[in-house]
Amino acid sequence: MKRFVYADHAATTALSDHALQAMTPYFQVKYGNPSSLYRFAQDTKAELEQMRARVAACLGALPEEITFTSGGTESDNWALLGVAELRGKKGGHIITSAVEHHAVLHTLAALEKAGFAVTLLDIPPDGVVTATAVREALRPDTCLVSVMFANNEIGTIQPIEQIGRVCREAGVLFHTDAVQAAGHLPIDVEAMQIDLLSLSAHKFHGPKGVGVLYARRGIPLVNVIYGGAQERGKRPGTENLPGICGAAAAFDEACANMEAERAYLTPLRDRLIAGLTAIPHTALNGDPVRRLPGNVSVCFEGIEGESLLLLLDDRGIAASSGSACTSGSLDPSHVLLALGLPHEVAHGSLRLSIGEYNNEAEIDHILETVPKVVERLRDMSPVWDELVKGERPHLI
Image (cartoon, rainbow, N blue to C red):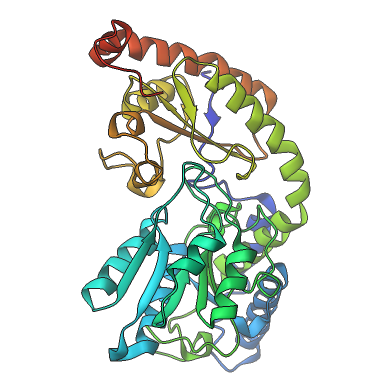
């Protein structure tokens, strides 16, 4: 049987046994609609509120500040469009970074067309958005800052607490897309002065189709859909109770095991980084230390990322060249381009995102396989031939 190594945990994760066990009763036993009045249904309503409290506790939030959504994309959209709706015809200025997920960037592009001004902060090669850069970009009409907690492609962790402090001092709302961070990094919305936060359950071994929007008490959520009275009337539609229970269980478990996961994954990550960057003309993307414990992102000069992924897949390694949400695109990653990488270098990117189910033997397999695949692709590449002959300069 061919070996299979799953190294794309930033795209999605397997449902944990703990989450599956939490979900199962709500399919055939506890299937009541939480909005109905009889006891059978009201019992599920009480359990829904218990799940809300569990998620809130993991974030240092209050239960009434938690609203369940369909995932990170909806939560991002709701946060940004909601603040814009509160501004009404006044419009305003929004600050974000050039390396955000498209759920943020595309929403802000739509708001630009509606009359809002958007500043995309320039990003240094390590991918870190500094609090100073945010402070210098503030204007009298700035109404929102949105900076992701940790990047989905290069793994860089942002100084969220410092950015939150700058925004709170300026009286500007601060949103963070924490989809890649939740369950993997400590989050305290009060201490970090976060006003709005998005997360998605399937990134920490919860079910797909469940997300959370945290909105600090006192920030009115504006409806983006209309209907019934669910979620305090702000997100109508019968609640996905099995998914919510699985999400809460998975989040609890992930937060409880966070330090153990970090201690286990970081040495594996660093082995991968050391081994892959030993390949000539290879560069690490993002900060070497200030990064998610399971994230490795590199660029290999002289090859094309899609071919790399196909050959790795043929050898039993599931990986990515960037965001899973744009895997159908042939364009180089907007994140890597924002770091200042040339197009021809960004095209040769590889993202490996490992999880607690990976082991040393799988890391060995990756480190044995990737150099051989890179060598094979370079042998086939006319661009690499020109680089070797000195007909064009090396960029890495």
